[in-house]
Image 1: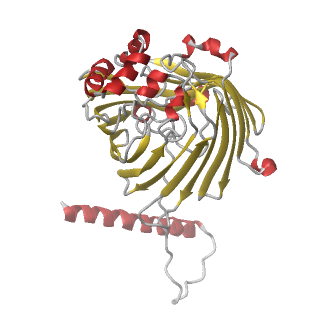
Image 2: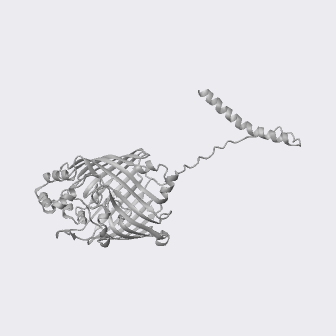
Image 3: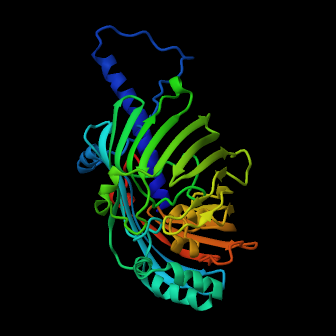
Length: 443
């Protein structure tokens, strides 16, 4: 088998070399003048075989048409197992959860300067896109929490957990799918962008650990200036919006909030080469004045790390809850996160977060604060904790994911229950976009 293959290749090579010589001989035979005899020292004519460059894979016609109208950023579905213990060691969550997300932009023009951005997902809370489908939900978890709570914690729960609030927090399951964000996004002049509608939160270079959960939403308007050659900063933005309705993710059920405003943000962002992304913002929310700073460093010259992010915040003043006159003092916190892509399949992230115990005052809900359910990423919550997040890419469209966190140190507010003192998640993410558009220019 191997010898016949080699002979075939040799024969083809000989033919390739002989063909130019045969053509040249035919041209000589047709020439009326006899050519001069070749020099004995002249080299024999040679022919070079050039392998044609592979053509770039062409996008299917229907995919080209889709890309013209839709800029699809994310489309995936995931399932996970979740185990959570609270600060009284109640095993409140031992369940299966699912999540689906679609995020993108409908483009009026081919360049995407005028369009409507959208983000839809499962989940029934501001900071929960996952919904339980087996093993019990928030109702079971709440009962387990209450049974192991201290007398002062039980008194706080009974004081602030009204029947309607309990109903809201216990409705954690199902497969409901909501349009969380929907807004007009236009760039009439290069570098000037306007957004209006159900918006995402501009976190700058920070993450959800010290700002607001990635599943969060606001309703209002935003002006962005993106012209670093004239402004020095890569981004300067101003946002006026309403932040609230924590149990109403559906934008169509809270569209009237576009007429209200309790959230003002002023943000500056600057990139320094390819190694530093930094931002600073001032946010006024419900009379709270918060300053946030963040910097992400690319450190690939350090072999065991790819990047490190440092983010901090300072809540400068005391504010009260709406429901009752109960002032929470100002506070501050920080988070340090490092990540490393070990190889083309394994990604690791880990870090430490220190979030002040009164940060849940931003929910403006005594009930949420009693259970330490704040507005930052629900995986992190309040207090001092470490965390690690591994991910393994099994195929181009299927990842295995995990997350573990554990709180350390004492928690200073004795009438509150830290709902996620220790948490473990393990599951998978199925990238539907890569299945539908395997040759997409943007993945």
